[in-house]
Image (cartoon, rainbow over all chains, first blue to last red; front, side, top):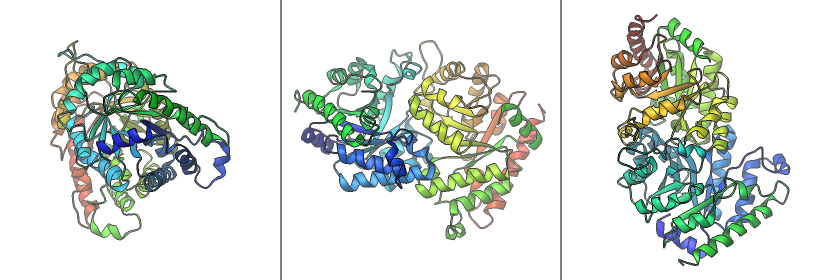
Length: 274
Length: 274
């Protein structure tokens, strides 16, 4: 999917919500555990209940890998289901990969060619040649970790370097020489508040993928105040707050209600630009 | 496996070689492609040909993931085979993971509980709470990226901070407060030469996992000169130089000869300490 299509979807759906498919077999409703493929059954129900309210889905690969072969099957089936049933969805593999060039190329092949996923999250620590193999595919995206939502973001990302920039700013600046805003986005945690202002000085037009609203405590209003551009420029993710809104047989309806509430807030924010 | 057992294995085998199982379906000998499980068949032959010459195996997960479900099956089968046939081998999942706490915990469960792997490579960018979930398992290890072997290591890892330390030094120093040398190792590329001296000032006793000898151009002698401790303190990885030593039906014998040559050089280096 290209940038213009993504913007059109946001405008049309009045939503920049990404639903995080962090599907933990230990947290899904008991009645699904009897089904042949409980993880896929859960995902399918969540997707059907939320697809008109969001523009993206983000399976977090850890939750699938921890189930081994079965988890990988559930992931492939989930991606295929979204692709076929809801072709306007932007699919993000939250993988946080990044390795030497020939290895990153293997990951890129896996996500972009075999699974036809739109975007992959990538860690910047290993530098340019670990990221560029992901940048050779048309209309496919790298979402580079810049300033994450967790406490550990203070350990290195906010480290000041000798030129007076923090590491996450150096990542933003340097990575812009690798690709433009047509195939690069950045992860910026919703918990980082006013740092969005500093980030927008360096990347005024890039889309930001923003986790941390909901369970992690970030504020949607604050993210929009400091981070929204005239093209929106934000994809805000919510995982646990939506997919685990209920543990009962009504989990899908509860997820829909939770997504509706977020979408309503997003429509409010979008009034100022669309 | 604990540190003392690893050192004993190195002493006994006169080797600190790790064979990297970067098994690329596009590079394995043609005659294996007819077999039911070509990747596992290749790995099994390589393992049987080299197990007495090395102390560790390191499957790089990208090469398995890119095959989807089949790749994951090959990985699980390979790990199980090593565990059962060669229980003295230290198994490293080269995964370069690192995510927010609850996600890292899922990865840890996957590698340490389900697969009984000894160690996982982890990226430090997201800081302490992305790493600590991997540190709660007895005799299981985190191998944290410090200074990698690729060109991109110059983009951020060698960035100087305001306190006059480079980012990789900050990673080494800070991460020592998370765990001791009984469950933490560091990745340091063989191509980094004299940086090993600076690294040993900060982590005098930690094991270092050293990729980059062979195809990437690092020198074993230089690594040992600057990086070896009185307990060895090194696991040196070779992947392509060993597993693709021949593309013919003699690939396993050729891999053995290549591993023998490295082991011989290692035995020479170990003379000074054991």
